[in-house]
Image (spheres, one colour):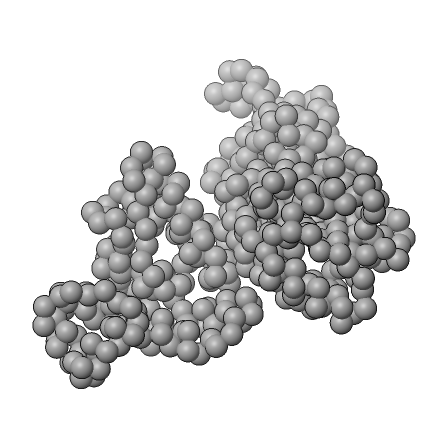
Length: 466
């Protein structure tokens, strides 16, 4: 069998993969750039390739495109430290076998390589294609699964059911599925079935004929006709009235519908993407949602995790939203201090990503300083249960930091996090006292000499009085 090619400009990544493949008895060759690997192709070819995306010179995606053109059966695993949908599904666009976000678990990486090798032996690679939506970010495992699903679904016409709490980004995912599908140049039409009065919803969906009811002075095209050949996004489908569930089922079953007051069937050529924050399985059991319609909609199901299940993404999302707000408002971007970020990590975010985005916009508009501290947060944020129960908040935030450190494979975690903890405590105490060290030391329960020594050890630059 030919060797596995490892391509990454990061020597430590190459070393980790080399050691892991050596343990498994898998032959390999390593390259520090895509250009170096491209040159080597003149003399040799690999059994499979595992490559970083962003490197000096040619990118991993450019390499992937070349390999797809010349070696269409060659499995390629794309690695990246950039945790966004752009990186994930751009890999699938080029026909990557799989996408591996950094930092990765070595055992999982080896298992993935072995799967790719087996696939190579069978000569049965089926590349998936899609593009990307830059607004969807996240390196949490649950979000990586969403990215993979979007990548694989983009060339499909299958009906998709998106489950997720309010504010998790269901419509963003629906847009991504449409924008990178064969229907991309056709309309994307969205309707929130919970926001339209029951007696108007039928006309909104299916349209009406002139004279169908009082006030119907003209023929009106409904959302199904507006979305012809494109995608119809039915948000909050769980709240759809029973009689309209029946009409929707009929459209999904035979592909035809009637305008209100109409007698001629109209052919519907649309892809349905539905979304709900409710548990449709339970609503079916309770008799509130038709079981046959549920099965029609539940061809492919995507679950979007709430923000409390992906707290490690909060810093990434907050930075992105701060950049976005500054760009939209034409102002200098503000930054969120480490202590404020740790505080946000302890919050519950019932409004999920949308709530975080709204907070970042508020901070951009309302905060006078360029660095945002806990005291700069809106009053309702500082008065949350987490603010009155700091021990629990710290435990949550610390737990997230430990999880991230373990995932990265960090060493000496106890010492590193202890220094961060002490540094944050001292910095906040000095800020609270206006730099007066005696007062800060008293509040922290330590002597002034101890505080001075720790300030020096931790590299804190404080020239306040005291």
